[in-house]
Length: 135
Image (tube, rainbow, N blue to C red; front, top):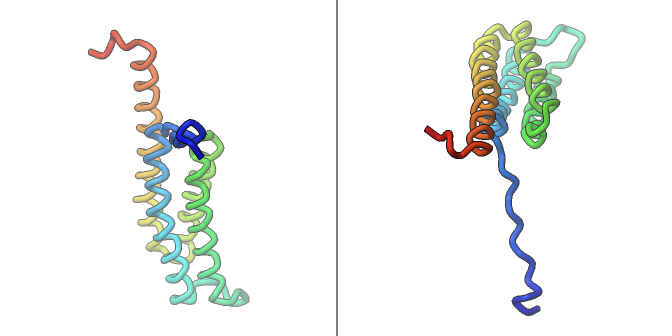
């Protein structure tokens, strides 16, 4: 294969601030969601007819969904899915009340990431459209 036939390296799609920040929050929160599932299992916090190991399954499913959601944050429905996952973590506080603290902290970080990130994206788009107004 000659140099003329070598394909050019693929350039990465530019990511906005909202997408980048929200993906960081969800990735770290996925670890906490898995650990929350272990806590639900260890404390036997599920109601009696449900086997305790379902806590681990639920924590793993939520963690995997958070990781998968990071791939779709470029779309508005991906951001909304991230909010749904924040609500799921908050609902876990009915089983283990300390998960309410986790929901408040990560929910606040996700809110900041999506709201402030979107504002930064709008500002950057406006500056890119009018480079003379950079001051």
